Image (cartoon, rainbow, N blue to C red; front, side, top):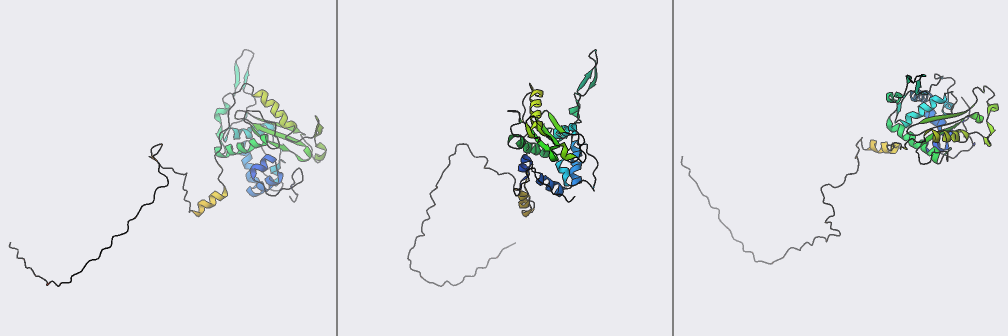
Length: 302
């Protein structure tokens, strides 16, 4: 759309890898990324995860979509991030688990809704996204807002002029979204900025929203057993793919080790090199003689 995408600090720092850019929430990297993969394709992926976005608009939807210009419900955000916690499977969000009447009869039961989760992305992708998002709470824009010894991951988000602020985070068992902002700023978005709230000079996603998420999650998970995220599979780099192509697709596979050898040796080191003996030399007298050929005839009787 002809506008320049800036980081909130207005600074640049050369190239960034996606892990570091995510942890530090670098706007320019994700604007470039969505431009590379395609805005329409990125929106389609968001819908697969559970984001109920407005239809793609080829005229108005640009790289700013990566920075949150399209409206979305907090419930959808919590549901979408739950896909990462659930190894790529999505379950319909269920704000109400159970409803009973005055006699105790159950008239609504959603307790088994998670059993109907369906895969929407590969588990290796979901687990690696989770691994990246864990850094946001340990060394990124929401550092210090984690859950102690309980594994957690999440992402901050801040609208232009601090008009909206988000934190969406999850553990292996619960996904929660916190949003602060204005329902409709219209053209006066600059006047919707949130400043000087609760002693915070300017509300970013890593301030009040992340703190609110932290306090809520600690209460909500009180008594829930601590579980660990799945170990993500290693990400294959372009360099690996290039080397494989140079080998015409041949993959040597994992390193192989000797088999069938007894434990504990015996092993021999610094083997003495073999000692080759020189050939023996002798002097002899040669006598030359001439032997006449002899012809022998054999008769075979039948």
